[in-house]
Length: 111
Image 1: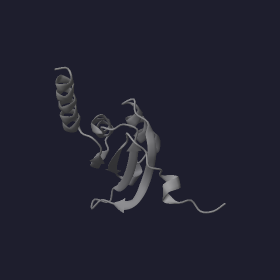
Image 2: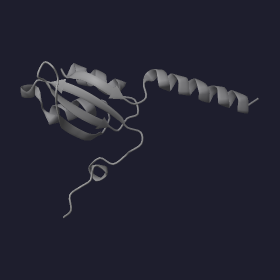
Image 3: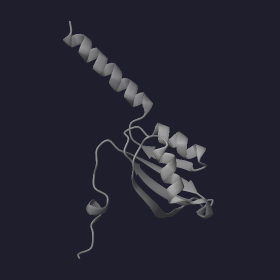
Image 4: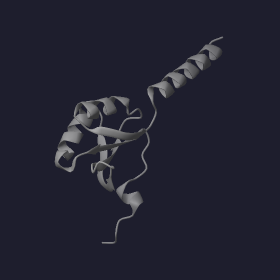
């Protein structure tokens, strides 16, 4: 079997967000992280322990989640004791802007 490519292991997917968290190596638990994500009715698509560490010696874990907006998952992960390092996706502010634009377009169409 030939070696896998990055594209095979991590295919590009729409409507997802990415979150990086850190924790002490002894506190790492894939099932606990998955539970924190699933508490938000979201799907954990990828979970990867990276080779990186924080200055405090915490392990860095990269997550890809089946939601466009990471905000709910971030709050859940923080409740579970994980430190959120970074996120990518559409924030609530972006959702509000998009909603306003759609409402304006609908108003123009209906006049």
